[in-house]
Every structure is written in C-alpha cells, then in structure tokens.
Amino acid sequence: MSLSLRLDDDMKQAMRDKDKFRLTTIRMVRAAVKNQEIDLKRPLEDGEILDIVSREIKQRKDSLQEFQKAGRDDLVKDVAAEIDIISVYLPAQLTEEEIKAIVEQTIQETGASSKADMGKVMSALMPKVKGRADGKLVNQAVQQFLP
Image: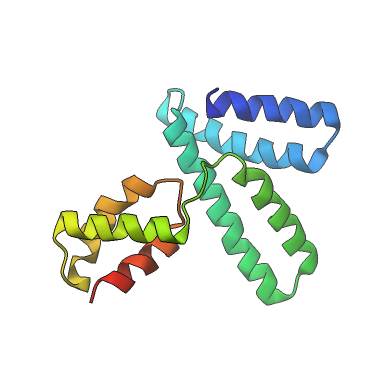
C-alpha cells in the first residue's frame, strides 16, 4: 500500500474513531503532501512523501526543544504526541551500530581521510539512510570516524 493511501485510510479511521487529535495531525501531513503535489503539478511518489513526513517530524522536534526550554509542558505533551503519530509513517529506524557500519563503509568507498572530506561523505551517505536515520546522528557518526 502506498504511503498516500495509508495516510488516507488512517485519516478515515481517525474520523470513524472520533479521534480529533490524530485526525488533525494526519490532516496536517496530508496538507503538506497536497501542497507539494500542487507545486509540482503531479502526484508524489512514496520517497517524496517520506521526505515530507521526515520534514514534518523534524519541525516538531525543533518545536519540542523550544517548548521544553520555555517550560511549556502543555505544548510539549501535544507535540510529542504528534511526533508519535507521524513517526508511524517512517520506515524502521537504523540503530546506532547500523549507522556506524554504513558510515565506515561509505568513508572507505569515498576514500575520505579528513574532516575536509565530510561533504563528500555526507552526500554519498544520506541517500543510503534516507528516512531511516536522523541527519544529526549521521553527522555525529561521520565526525567520530574522520580525524
């Protein structure tokens, strides 16, 4: 089942269950997908929808940090719940060990030897972990392996 159809089905189920919070969250994601479809004037593929889902989660994680700094526990709870709902649409996340193994392999493939080669490593690495790992974790792993 495509990601778009899954979002539609989950939205309908949230309507049936009268789960307003879940319904609102899924509608926000669907609106972001629809806006991108309008901009591109074509339906999106699963990979493109996955990019949007990742972006939505990243935005909410950033908001979560800001709300925690401000002591807004009411908003922290809501944003954390939104992250949990949206995370269902991402593929299984890589473990730290898996990320390190992929980083080591990519460094060997690119022949990187210093932090100056980090851009080359990241550009080769990110398509391999797309949607399955947080970019910050990947960046940290690369920095650990490059002298």
